[in-house]
Each structure stands twice: as structure tokens, then as C-alpha cells.
Image (cartoon, rainbow, N blue to C red; front, side, top):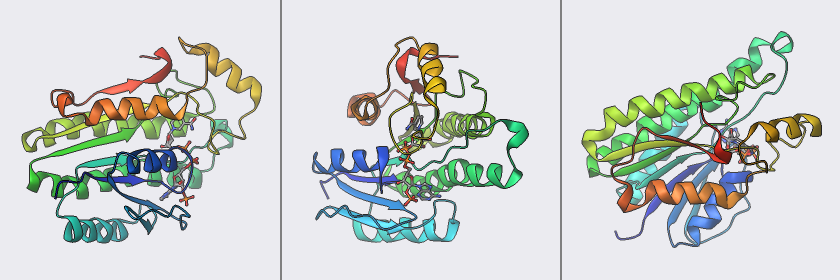
Length: 234
Ligand SMILES: NC(=O)c1ccc[n+]([C@@H]2O[C@H](COP(=O)([O-])OP(=O)(O)OC[C@H]3O[C@@H](n4cnc5c(N)ncnc54)[C@H](OP(=O)(O)O)[C@@H]3O)[C@@H](O)[C@H]2O)c1
């Protein structure tokens, strides 16, 4: 099959929804998922209702895709949740929830899609980090730590998967105006934007620009990298 098959997690809204429409516009087959139904209707879009941390459900989804298309070219691990609060006020149940979605979800999708990609000797995986990790932002210890784990997974899987012609990279966005950050007070946002080299919110196409680069055929020598937006670095 000639058409590119892309799996994106967390596609009901926000960045995942944008990416689904963007890559459908490029004539890819897009398979998305989220905990709730999606209202995205397109002949080349299919939606699975699942929690990314539900290992059995993820296994079922990936095996259904494998049966139907025989391959997964690209995996975008976008689904994520944040917890923005002082650590003294953060219950362990929140830590568990954030790690389940962000870390366990990313890992299980990498593992299952990785098996299909390994069989086909081709694949590109893009995970989602955040600038909150290098900036060591107060109030985001749990979120930043979960994304730090995603950076480690990205770098180590890049090595483990390289023999199968699979690259694994990550993008670390700045704030982009979605539901994820809509409740963060303006003063906090302003001080965060001031910590960036380029002081502005990110836009959806800042994300697709980096993903386009990672999935380009010419990027087969780029793996284990995390590209932060806004000029942020460690
Ligand atoms: N926006 C920002 O400022 C920003 C900055 C840095 C990094 N990021 C990262 O970018 C990614 C996307 O963020 P966003 O701003 O688009 O967030 P968002 O608007 O809150 O959307 C999150 C998406 O993920 C899905 N989702 C959440 N938990 C899930 C789970 N357990 N299982 C399956 N799907 C789940 C949600 O759908 P359901 O509710 O239906 O499950 C929704 O479609 C995240 O990884 C985030 O950490 C965002």
C-alpha cells in the first residue's frame, strides 16, 4: 500500500486534532484515539476510544491497524495531561494519573507500534516533551518529571530501534493555547514566555513543522533528538 499510515494519540482536541486534520490534508491515513468519541469525520480517519494507559486496549488497537493496513509508518505520541500545582499540594493520585497517561501511554504505544515497524523495517516515532523540563518550572514537578521520562524513553528506544530503521525523536513545545493551559494564570504564562529565547506562544504549525522534519525521508540520520521550541535548551 502506497498511502502513509499515521497513528496519533489524543486526537479528540487540541494539538492532536490539528495534527489529524493536517496529515489527512496530506492524504495520509490517520488513526487516532482518545478516551472520548471524536467528531472528526473523514474517509481516511478512524477513531479508537481508549485510555492510552490501558495496555490491552492499545494492543487491540495496534493489532487491528496491523491487520487492516499491514504497517504503521508514523506514530505521534501526543496524548498527555498536565498537573500544575505546588508539590506540597499534589496528592499521589495525581502523580499516578499523570505518569500513567504521559509515560505508560507513550511507552506502550512505542512498544506495540515498534513491533509492526520492526517487521516492516521502517518507522518514525515522535514523542511529546515540554519546555517545562529544561526550564525546571515551579509548580510543574510532576508534569516535567513525566516528560523527562519521555525524553529518556525517546533516547534509549532510538538506540534499541535503530537496527530496524526506526527513528525515535521528540518535540518539546512552548505553551500553545489549548485546554491544557487555559486555566494557568496570565502572570504565570507571562513569566514563562519571558524565560523563552523567543517570547511568544507557540502555534499549531510550529508543531507540524518539526514533525514534518522528523518524518521526512531525508531525516533518516536524525534520531534520539529532542527539539524544543522557542529557543529553549538545557
Ligand atoms: N498546549 C501546550 O501548551 C503544551 C505545551 C507543551 C507540551 N504539550 C504537550 O502536547 C500534547 C498535547 O497537548 P494539548 O495541549 O493538545 O492538550 P489538550 O488540548 O488537553 O488535548 C489532550 C488530548 O489528549 C487526549 N487524552 C488525554 N488523556 C488521555 C488518555 N489517558 N488516553 C487517551 N487520550 C487522552 C484528550 O482527549 P480525551 O479527553 O477524549 O481523552 C485530548 O484529545 C501533550 O502531550 C502535552 O503535554 C502541550
